[in-house]
Length: 240
Image 1: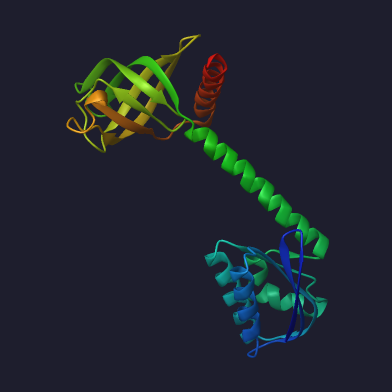
Image 2 (image 1 turned 90 degrees about the vertical axis):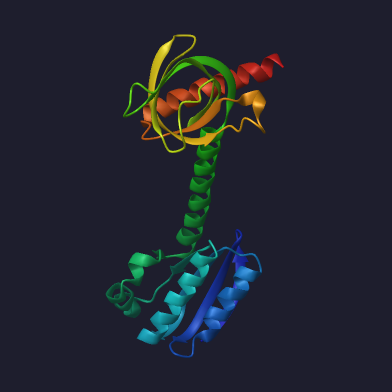
């Protein structure tokens, strides 16, 4: 099999020709070199491939594994009509994205990156922390006698909070937080798990305190927290 490499839109395109069979080790070597050269998006063009046998399919599977293990993406395009059935029978068409044209394949890489960027932005939003002082009620989910009343949330994110003034809980305890979000005083009732305890010797200024991670938080509730945090972060930065 002959391989010619070219790049377009940050994607490395491997134009394959000949046969994909037991002698296709050069494909694995070429893909490995692409990864070492910094290309994480790889498109294999099968337009000039004449023949593929089951050993060749195994080589393609190895190539796919090498790319995915390196957190890259590999896609195929221009599979000749007489070979499409082989991809279907072996299930390779359900594992690797296959496109009828190079243009569609390149567009899909762009779509993937756009989706990734959106997910990263959403993740960053969830982790934004707002310094705040809100009085809350904190109870053990299974033992309501284990309760802290009128303690303080010192910072709040969409995935958790740091709570000051309570030393009744242990790591792993499941708790219920009840508090009101200003200015409308909308009541929030959230389940959480204790994931960190302050150390009296090393962190006297924030002791007693615990960090909790919210569990099974509904999407609409998390969005309300995000809106509250972003609105108040913006207000704080404007005043600064």
